[in-house]
Image 1 (cartoon, one colour):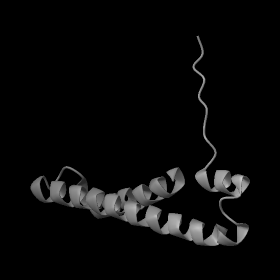
Image 2 (image 1 turned 180 degrees about the vertical axis):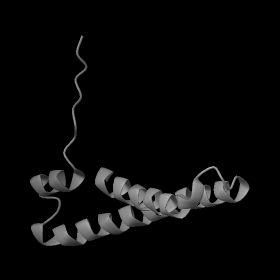
Image 3 (image 1 turned 180 degrees about the horizontal axis):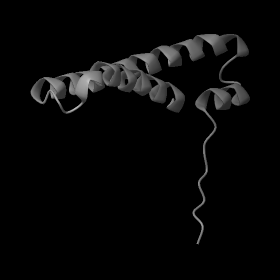
Length: 86
């Protein structure tokens, strides 16, 4: 038995189609969504960086010499994932 997955169209497209939002408001809404996505991603990124930094402080050989690069990669990846998923 196959599971059907229906994705809803993004709320912005739905609102445009229904006339609830004008096309002139599009950039304002997109900018607000981007700011919210970057803020949420930054919070999660800082948490990821802090986790790796604390773990490296407690167990110095756990991540090796490249712990800082790993922490930065995780932090930026979290920002990207949140922006892509929003």
